[in-house]
Length: 370
Image (cartoon, rainbow, N blue to C red; front, side):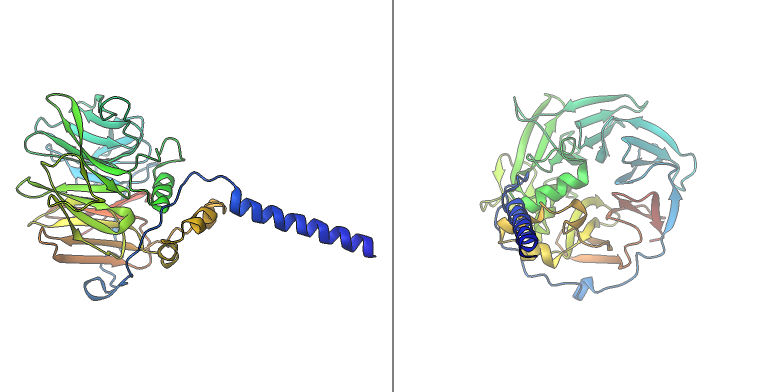
């Protein structure tokens, strides 16, 4: 009996050593950076739990999913970007649904210019323009020579014609890392702050950096006077206010041209949308995770987490949550659905009659009355 027991012990020992070696040494795509996560305040005060986002009405999208960005066009139609690369068009009540255009990638944000062209941030392609008859062309996919735009995310067109947009990560391109959600998880776990805000000049074709040093640069909106930009930094739970005329800011250093407008938010802020009466709507793709925050100053443990099967990554549970704030940072609305029935509530598109709820993965377009 002793020989089989010795062999069994040796085999077990080899397995343990192999497991330890795997969790400590197996290559992972990230190089995590330590940071100080702010102590989470939780769902208290203005963010106290409620069910104002529960029991949404739904508009069917056929076989499409992921109405990540929604906007009313100059023609009064509702435009919706979905996961297939299609941009859908419909009447505000959901009737007359049709495919308006397909970029061949994944549009995460869009706006309309003064000529009625749809200007799209395509995470796979770059900054695109779609004419009123659905023809698609590339505006830019790089900053200068050899500096590729890897993750175009959100876009807003200024009255001057300048096009501001975010490049969420210069480390993880969705086309190379399994899609937009997977690439975002890698970037946020790494915390290397490579996200940036860019501006494209349609007159010269030049693309320049407004600001860099963001951990996943996400939603973007302009102030009412057009002088300031509001930008979500998803990986640090905050919203920045930037001088729209700034160039080459590094937000890892203090500058009078940039300040944090909202900080220590209760979830991962995603899109920003201007609403009515001065409101700016913000959606949370996911709530905060105590486990993720506890790993903030433990970069080695974050590499170990990524060696787990993807199903075991510390992705927070679903939780529907959108808020609205004004330009002074005052929270003026907070709508929640603790059940998370409508997944990844990334923002709100507000019209006088409806609040349309954006989502990264939902199979319908959710809405409710104001």
